[in-house]
Image 1: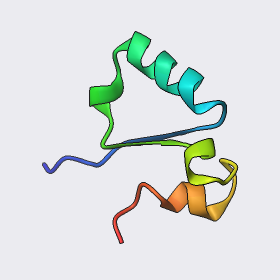
Image 2 (image 1 turned 135 degrees about the vertical axis):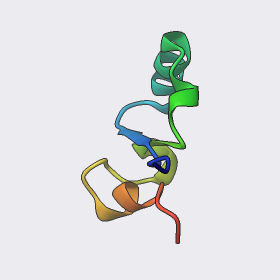
Image 3 (image 1 turned 30 degrees about the horizontal axis):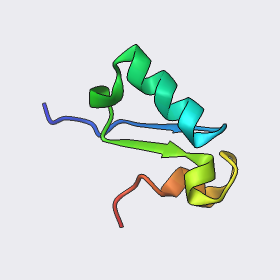
Length: 55
């Protein structure tokens, strides 16, 4: 069975969200991590939801 790509999309200040992920030690679990502030869109917008997806 092939691996299913896994991403996390989160709202909030980038430094705080990245810190939480680092402290939890879960960064390696995900193929992509998207913080809404880094893509300039709220989590509920299509751009933030599609940004971790391959083109």
